Image (cartoon, rainbow, N blue to C red; front, side):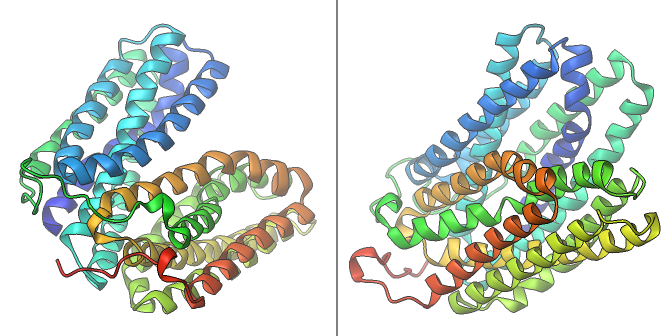
Length: 399
């Protein structure tokens, strides 16, 4: 199953890398949608993605994650192809909602599949491996998109988007080879477990992880705005720093699973990771002070190293808690809650990052770093707390 998921991830993540690079220009120059409308449309689609990420968990428990994953991939591939026919705002928003919603469903179904197909450390290990594959494939997709960006013509952009759509549909080939898990034959639902919305511990952990997950947008939104607008470093530094992050995550994500061997170590890992995120915030802030381009670049490299290490260990710790604290009889519903939390964190992150660090400099960076550490400390305290039977999920059953 790991090999099947790897090849499917290669296809879907390469498509993701293509769309990351060309989508904004495609929407504005080819589809003729104004930048303001693109922003509003993607915000609406992102809000819908939160809902579909949550709802997908229930669907996975009812119909099985494999079936949901196949249907969602089909819908997303069709939606990407439909972008090429989009010429007005209303159609754009509709297609974007389908594309983003289907991608959210895939993420939930993907994690629900891992939760049911693997047990113990294997779940986090496989997820770490697939994240490495995801990062490398996104980088490859960005390289493919660079050709379209270099050509800069309408046919080039359309070809790139259609190529991404085809890749999503190609992913259906390995996904169809996934084995049918118990309860996925359609004769009976898998459910019967606890409702995650009544599990206070899981909801608290999800909320704290949502706060920590804002660090992704800190890297892709806050850091570029800060480097180009508030430091003497050249603009090309942004691309180099993002490449450094990709290299570190790809090299160390699997290794980081050795640090997490259970719930207590997961809590410690999240706390350690958020302290590293605080150090990264201090490094970013320091790069904005006078000292020359070379000094600023050195500080930014150190900050991105700390940021990348913080990203790696907080993700590994968060995955462990999301898997171990979920009721296996309702794994889809639990992972739906977890993925919805991440989606919410990423949705609010641009506003939070730009209104703190980018707007106020050092005080804003300190505030943002303090928020991360507070979430990490809360997670650590949560893993050490005693919980009443009413708020504790059912013990994990053998699968």
